[in-house]
Length: 319
Ligand SMILES: *[C@@H]1O[C@H](CO)[C@@H](O)[C@H](O)[C@H]1NC(C)=O
Ligand SMILES: *[C@@H]1O[C@H](CO)[C@@H](O)[C@H](O)[C@H]1NC(C)=O
Image (cartoon, rainbow, N blue to C red; front, side, top):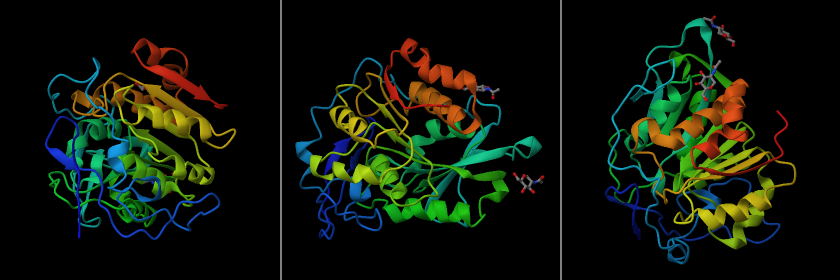
């Protein structure tokens, strides 16, 4: 039987956070399953329905939460982008420049998971079009207008996005760079991103929006995360606030890491035009990581985020 819990996310319709299924993975120090699929939406780093209420917190929004929905644009980057679908990747949504950038520009690839692991990628259109407009191709779980309901994405859905890109099926969008691959997502989708990256060395960066591991007894699994992790979190009202502090501290020694907090609450700034300040931060982080953009690096590490009211912690960056 499928059970669901409803949480107000993004200030929109209530959405399902997790589905309880019979457990086959028991967290225990030293127990590292071969794959990150686990037993719940969001995979091994996620939480079961019965445990969730302990962690979801008081909620609410902070002063940095967007006021009303922002305008739809083609993004602020040099390659006007759009949300579309592709029959070669059913059950997913593509965000990409409208035409392949001139000069055979190489395009980093991102696999995305939605908050509550819903099948509605359209909720993140503002953010994902913005990122795509800087020359990225993104495959998101779900459809542009998917319903919330009790259906949720699974780790395999995000893995399907990776498999699709690695089968060269994204090449119509441009010159995809399969050495520059990120998994990312909001809330349950962020946990799915970490679970997908687990034991999959195609993934080189993990970008977590407003989330971290809920349960202390699963944090040992972070030992298997070997790539840089960035957390963009919504301040003390966000259910990802204290949990991301714990995960940030526990990541393997030497792993480059970023934890930045903006006082929005769990819903972030996704609904603002161009994804708001989280869109700006995500673009800068990706442009630094994947294109060695010094301006973008300085925005993240040398005061830009702080000036935009983020509280920043970072360590171990050498480039
Ligand atoms: C674009 O660059 C890639 C290598 O980055 C190369 O394999 C491909 O043939 C190039 N395509 C064109 C049209 O120049
Ligand atoms: C560097 O990244 C920023 C976004 O953070 C972008 O606006 C700028 O155009 C990029 N610079 C270059 C040279 O690509």
